[in-house]
Amino acid sequence: MIVVTGATGNIGRPLTQALAEAGQQVIAVSRHTAAVPDGVRHVTADLAEPGSLKPALAGAKALFLLLSGDLHATGASPADIIKEAAAAGVRRVVLLSTLGVVTRPFGPTRVAMRALEDTLRESGLEWAILRPGGFASNALWWAESVRTQQVVAAPFGDIGVPIIDPADIAEVAAACLLDDRHTGGVYELTGPEVIAPRQQAEAIAAALGSPVRFHELTRDEAKNAMAQSMPAELADDTLDILGSPNPSELRVSPDVQQVLGRAPRSFSDWAARNVDAFR
Image 1 (tube, rainbow, N blue to C red):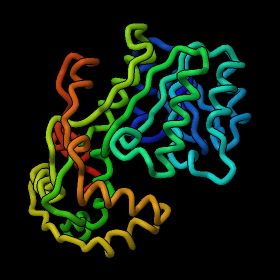
Image 2: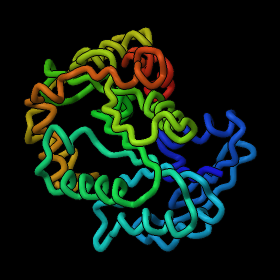
Image 3: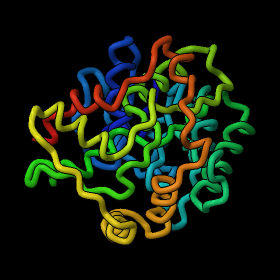
């Protein structure tokens, strides 16, 4: 039995589906009640309260750990989730970390994530760590403006990074959960090419078959918009990367190819599959 946290999100949903299709017993964990694939059991839990995971972990052999905002919750202790997993007899944990622990290791959130990686390494459990860069699905921030105004508004229009399709992250996670060969693996996950916001707008327009205008925001405008859904410090960190990526953040990693035996999907592929969000 495999437990998937964040099971209703952009990574957890395809991961849950892939594991179920592979014949695995899956428990999908999310904070709120949600629909899950046939044959999958759903459990509600708040990862900011590790003890709430006990019903999901009972009898599980593996855990996919995606913390999202729970890592930053006041009083959160994500290391306790690993302790709960070990106490429940879980044998393997696949942790979704971030490329930032390598490329910009001194920000508070990345210091916390690196500490969690170290806790997992020292836990005595089998483990694998996934470090993705930016997600293609972040383009969903533009969905409403594309639907209503045919415009993408973003800062740093011609500065790109090799963003990754969350479906590729899910496939790599499934491989790490199911295949012993990936035990002890640390995988940096990127897309196949550096792509800038203006190019993303062009790819969305191509998927729609209709024009999409690009409007470049100033950094302050972008921060004000981002601060409505994330801490201002995290918005600044994100804008630092988007506006001035360092060589490590521009590197196209071979790790998706290594794990899956194929190249990562392009942003155009992601846009074509998710075009209905922009209609």
